Length: 246
Image 1: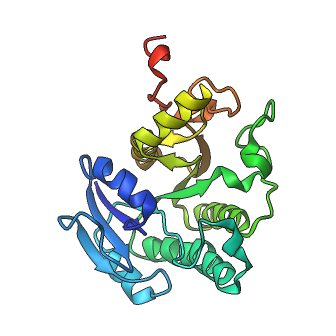
Image 2 (image 1 turned 60 degrees about the vertical axis):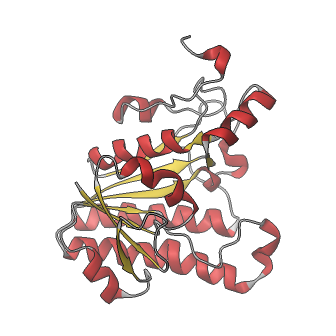
């Protein structure tokens, strides 16, 4: 499958592209090139409609993982207005322009990397909560992510595209996952490989708009992932050493 990865040169792309490239032909649209020089690369921004129009040609699906260059990982930096502007420009406006460009080029499927941060407390410890539980977080990053899901839902309904939103929970390298899991004997964080496996499954599954909880909580202690298991045939494989084979 030919897959356009929007924002593939960032943190998430560095984690998952090595796995995705084993299965699909990837083209990356980003302001800077991906770490793997063998990947096809188109320099550009999601605000540049000409770059988007070029990038979607010949693609079978779009994987949107862009995050604004001014969007901080440090919460203290959200005091800057530039951070807010960038988050909305990329995760709402840029997402819409990407999906519309894909639609115009005849691309019928997309995957959007949403986040469990759309819920207060990342929805941890809410018995009975699932993908139909209304998002309630008001942090600017969370707000743009849930508005992004609204964009996906609207484009799917109005343009007939299938779009899967993956509500990711803290994708990390395997060594970081293991360190956190061993320290606490539990973590909802998700390894790079498990995150990539969810993306691969979401690239195949096509049924209107769907949202999925994706977490390394393999025992589902705090996050319900039955929908991903049922529809995507996905569940996290990474286990604590003493839990393997159980």
